[in-house]
Structure formats: C-alpha cells, structure tokens
Image 1 (tube, helix red, strand yellow):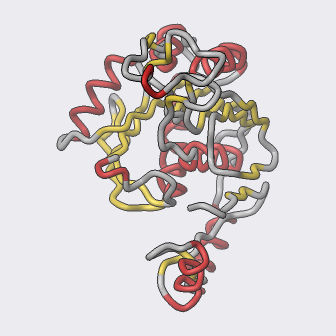
Image 2 (cartoon, helix red, strand yellow):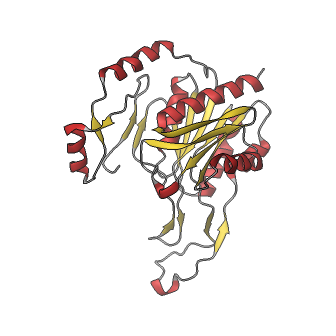
Length: 276
C-alpha cells in the first residue's frame, strides 16, 4: 500500500476502514490500484470498538515484550541486496496490542512500511546479523519475545565494495544466517515465552506449523498462508496459531489486528502459566 503511513497512536483504538463506496474508489484511483480500503466503517462497528475499550484488561501490566518486525536486507553490492516482501504490519500490530494490554514494548524493526508507534522503543536494524545482535542485547530484559520478522535465510559470503558487473552475477556465494528464533528458544528462561512466525505455502498449514513449532522450541507459532503472496503489504491475513496444549486457532482473511489481539491474549495466558 504505497503512500500509506501506519499510525498507532498511544491510548487510541484503531478502527480500520473498509472496501467499497466512492471513497474507496477515489483512494484506489489516487494510488493507481484496482481495489482498496477507503470507505468509513459502519457506525455499529465503531460503537462496538468503543465499548470494547471499557472491557479491555491490562493483562500484560508489568510485563516487557520484545517484538521483531519487517524484513532484513543482505547487501550484495552497493546497489543490490537479498530481501523479501515483508511490510512489518503484523509485528507492528502485535506491538500495538501488547502496549494496549499494559506491556512495556520494544520493537526491533528491519525494513517495514513507514509507521508511527507512540510509547514504544524502536531499534532499527538492516541485516540478519544486526537483528540477532539487537535481540541478544534485549532478550534478557523481556518476559516475551515475538519473532514476526522475515529474516533472510542466507547472506552473500562477501559484499562487494563496488557494483558487480551483470556478467559476474551468475554465481553468488551464500552463507547461512543464524536461526534467531531457535537460538533464543533454546536459551530462554523458564518464565519467558517465545512466539514464532512461519511463512508457508503448504496445503496442510497446521502440520507444517507443528513441525516448525517443535523443531524451533517456541511456545506459540503463527503460520502464515503466503500462497500467491497475497498477504504482503495488506491489512488482512490468513493462517493458524498453534501451540502445545491449545487447539489450533484458524484465521481466514481477517485483519492483522484481530490476529494480533488473539496472539497477545494467548501469549498472556502462557506467561501466567509459566509465572505461576
């Protein structure tokens, strides 16, 4: 969604616009798109959101939550890099919902859509190694780590100081990046909770997610359905939240804020359990 800036004002609830109507048509026309969000939501939806504020519980009060968001970029030369399509929207939504629930929140942000997130410490990084170093510096201070960042699996073994000629790009030697989620899941304290994310195109998302949950050692894992790349840069997502001891929670084309709320609630339950 080029031209947008995601704003998460502290102490305010976000009510997302909806598709349809003249406003949405105009918004799409301005952005040069065939479809989009621009129409003011129904009054009933706004009223329900306002009423929900009075019921909101500060169930993460006194807790610290570390969230990674966005994609990493691994430099090939001064012009080119290895990257991905991550916008960081899901991670930022989780940070916002954790903040609303009373937590002290730190975001380690790779490359994301432009955003404003009041009341949150933001640490900017570029590469996978920078992200690992930032997590290493913050992890011990936090009760929970939510790894939504899309970290590159590999990086060029060496980065060229000058632009590589096209004829020399046939082979780029790669070095595997560290498994950040696995590393910190292995070293976490018994009273810490780790939430992982996985992007899959498998037909059986839950099975693929369970295998990754177990192999990584996370407490919870949200597995994104990224078939066709439909979720990147969008406000909606599809996938499943899984964890040992809970039934899978499935989402089909719902807002990333709805997913974020569910993840934060389940994370809080895990924290309550491990902290007795």
